[in-house]
Image 1 (cartoon, rainbow, N blue to C red):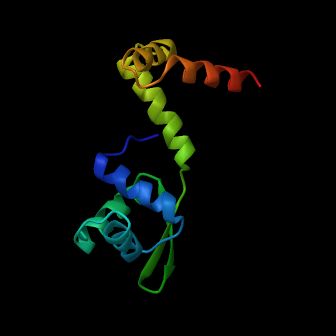
Image 2: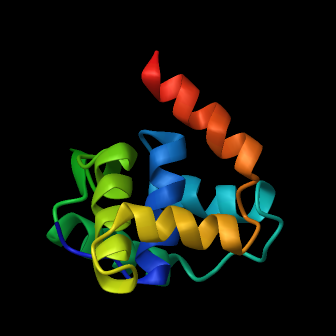
Image 3: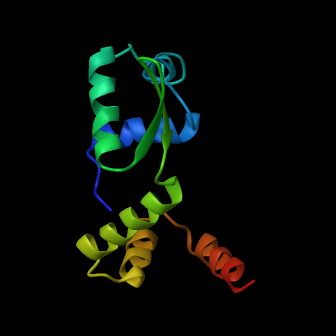
Length: 121
């Protein structure tokens, strides 16, 4: 699976949330939900077309209007991204990743124990 740029990933996150949307819906989401100024329509439209070329989104045409929808699930992309992170930064070892998170205090050892217990169920 192709890795997305930060801008592509940001727009893909919005498309995953909206499920089916027009470019104008993405712009509205950025403005209303994220509290930011609307970027140019052409910028978002270009990113969405790139996402489509990369196989992340599909579209349905209604005349000249395109409704976009995700083809790749958030879960599938997350799994691939996590695998890439572990491979690139933790020598391919999930153990190294977990150790890093515990050492950096991003995961409390008690939380880790709870997670392990949940995985056993």
